[in-house]
Image 1 (cartoon, rainbow, N blue to C red):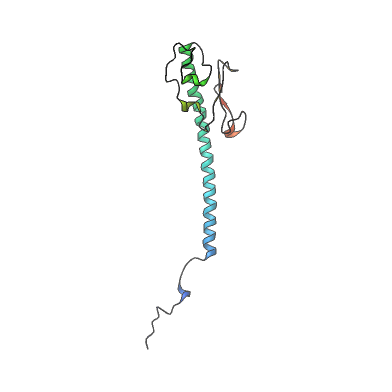
Image 2 (cartoon, rainbow, N blue to C red; image 1 turned 45 degrees about the horizontal axis):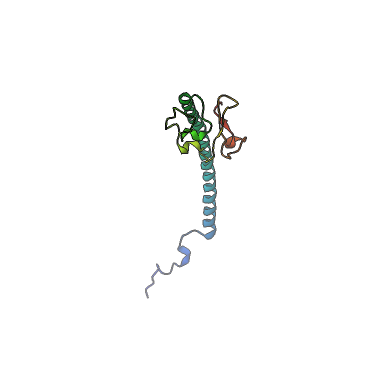
Length: 143
């Protein structure tokens, strides 16, 4: 009589993970993924807010160029893109359509005359509303 020992080992010798161990690993992966997504989201908002500040500087320079060419700042920001009737020395290229939207997709606030100079240009932050803290804070061309 021959015995085949390899077939008689049964289920006891097999290795593997239990359902509970697999669920624990999945939960841990979910927690780590949540933390990573949260941190990346904060960094994206920080980058957009800093880009909005830079865009205020760029638009301010465009408004200054318009002022030098036409004797004063434009009545509205759209005049940087499309020639208004009262701009005899208007030149194309002051700004593009995309320059008039903040990185968060909101419009800039523009006042002529401004409270801080010939014009005020304000980036309203992530929420697009006046006031706020952190990434909802406003930033003006006079700051």
